[in-house]
Amino acid sequence: MSERQERLQNRLQPEIREFRDACRTLQLATVDSEGRPNASYAPFVLQSDGYYVLISEIARHARNLQQVPQVSLMLIEDESGARELFARKRLTFDASAEVVARDDDRWQVALTALQERFGEIIAGLSRLEDFKLF
Image (cartoon, rainbow, N blue to C red; front, side, top):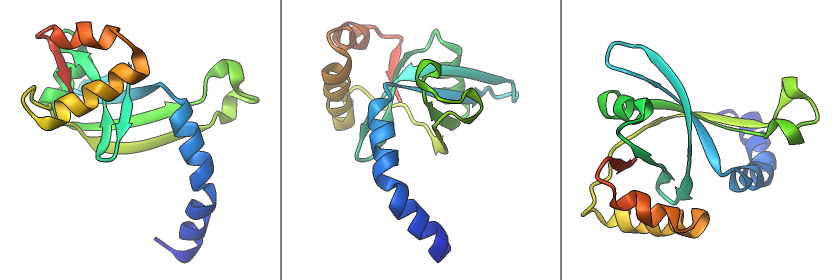
């Protein structure tokens, strides 16, 4: 990273953090094993080691993530709050997804954070076998 890019990133970091913390869902761009794309979204929680989503295997994006773990993520400003639709605030980044096993310590930590953020629905969804934590 160039010195100029680093200065810009340091200057924008508080604004990025504030925007990221205000978002409750993220957009996912996934592909299946044959390269067919899918755009979707999911509620998320951010932990020190990454973003976590709890999604059903019934959903195409969950199946895609199991087949091809590379994903593009986007957090984007709500249309209703944007001053200009052609220049909405957004963060985009590439990531690699993995299924977190139910007996993994991260499962409970992430589930607790999701429940704090989204309420009791998380307890119910997490008991369903088709719901996977990525």
